[in-house]
Length: 432
Image (tube, rainbow, N blue to C red):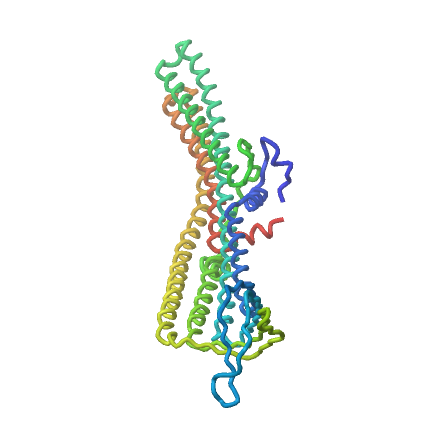
């Protein structure tokens, strides 16, 4: 965990691992993913609750407006007219019922519903893990973009300082008649261009800093100082090995597999309408109609069966819809596998190329420095023009900038490769 004291400062040095930790802690995307996991777990529990009995209690107290009650009992002669009864005066009624029903068989609806909810819960967790990979990758890119901005400022500032010293020397030479006015203007123009380049580099640095502040959840205006230089990371494995890793470690691919399993369970759930539902029931009833009727201890128990005949012609469309959803998930999975394979090839080639670029640009820096030294000596001995000197300096500046950028880009390319293979989280989990 990143120390809270660091967050209270207006300027803070920050390593890459600390940046990743902060990015994960402050991510709103991960909080949203966590809420989705909670929802999926609640739906899983809801599906499991379908195995529990249903119980209902009801009761009423009624006021009756002098109902006409004509009770007939069977007389001794078998006719419907019995002896005359005293009139009954009823003006209210109270009753209560308790019913309990325990499902015994529901056509596999409950079982397949639980299976589907469990697979979707696992898919939600895998989605959150995939989001974690993406946040780590974005944080790394933002961190090294800030590093590149700092490196650009350092290189340009150094060249600007040298250029300003050169302008001073040229002015003295021009005053003494040793240098043409036009050559002095060329040197001054170079210094002006470097000042503009420095302003542009500082603007890029400010934007990169704000971007990283937002990603890490830091207070606005916090100046981050990247203290970790880009690591020299090589692809290390063959393309086939990276592809093998992606098959077992990509969280989004695994999430699609879980959703495919869920869709298969949903097909079973749709087919459950073809079967009858069986349940055991029990109940209790009590009623009181003052002056007329009192019922207590009316306990009942039994078994019930329910079957909808219309399911014979209505269920077919439900099953077809569920099968179509499964086909959609399967196609989405195939598309995702293709995308992963293409992206993995791209990132692998980028990682290889980035490593080779560093070696070439390192040599280019040495060559440009040596070239500038030689041209500067020639210029001092009037064997090279001012244009030759300034061109050599520009070439040296470009080589140094490209070299610093290449080191950061190589690190980003490697982490992109790990992200595409699904192992970037493991990399930082194993980092001490």
